Amino acid sequence: MLLSDWFYGLLIALSALPLAAWAGLEILRFRRRRRGQAVLEGWRAMLLRGWAVVTVLLFAVLTVAVGLNRRFQYIPSFTALAGDVSPDLVTRPGPPGAETAKAVGAHGNSKRGLRQGGASRETPPLPAHGVVVKIRIGGPVSGVAARDSYVYLPPQYYDANHPDERFPVLYLLHGSPGIAVDWLRGGRVDVAMDELLRSHAIQPFIVVLPDVNGGYGRDTECQDIPGGPYVQTYLTTDVPSYVDAHFRTIATRNARVIGGLSSGGYCGLNLSLRHPDVFSGAVLHSGFLSPARNRYTGNLFGHDPALLSSNSPSYYLPTIQITRPYAVYFDVGKTETASLAQSKLGAEMLQRLGVPVTLRIDQNARHNFASWHHDLAYSLPWVSQWFDTTHAGSQTTA
Image 1 (cartoon, rainbow, N blue to C red):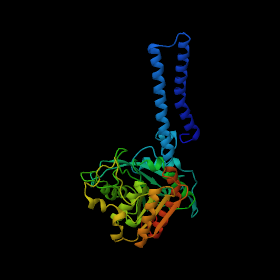
Image 2 (cartoon, one colour; image 1 turned 90 degrees about the vertical axis):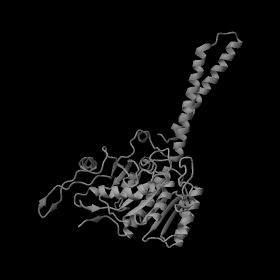
Image 3 (cartoon, rainbow, N blue to C red; image 1 turned 135 degrees about the vertical axis):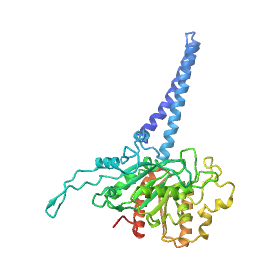
């Protein structure tokens, strides 16, 4: 409903209605005055005019907000606006434990046990779909205060027959302005993972959604900003360390890919190139090759041109040594002029270095969450295949 045409049209009509009513009443007052008839005067007239102005402004603001939301497809429904951002989200935050296992069990379908060696036993069912756990990750190394993050765990994570199985990890970053929940609320990455796993289009892996900015009022571009916050250290040291300590991950670079949308795509490329000991691949949805500079970023590099250059892949790519295995996936819409040009340039520069590159240009995609959700049908299988290529698929500890 929130993105429907009829709702948007209704808001436009409601914005115009008080204005039309006000104009009609003023015309009526003018005619009555000319005929010598009594008209509404004094505080009553002022009250009526005030009501019309306030109502017009209120609906105008709502119409503009809904129009912007329609453009970026950011909040898909009223339930998402109210906080219901994912069908997979468990009710209690924290790493998987008894409460999470209990919540997971509610998702599953009851199955009776299999017969083995003449004996029957109960086999706990897999969840019908994945589970999203809300956590808070602080930065003991970076000094970044604890921030909300989300972790998608595939149904196979709860397979009682393989309790020691470990999984590779995709770190998926939001854009700016934005927060960690964006990939759930707007991008619906959990729904995409569920569907792809159900159709056997991908192998199971974990998806981590960390917070890059700490709120809508800042755009850090994932940098270690002079004087703080040190977000690059947070994302490459604190976050992976926390995830590896609290979840059954494969804690190697071959089992980690990082990516994101828009500026989050730039972050994924830059962090994977600057920290090849942590990540082995990058995914860019409508991404860029250099950090943005706007009123939300402030002075990211302390007027240090060398620091800016060392965080701009467009500048340093020709000069670096690639740690292999390493691969990059680009996804961009044909009409996204800036992202398209930089995605093509990035793909060309990486190919010159012998890096395996996939560049997908979508004829219909836009710079919005509807397109980015659609793109996941291509990028997530690429991630799964990359983990297979690097032999970082799900592994059972001996």
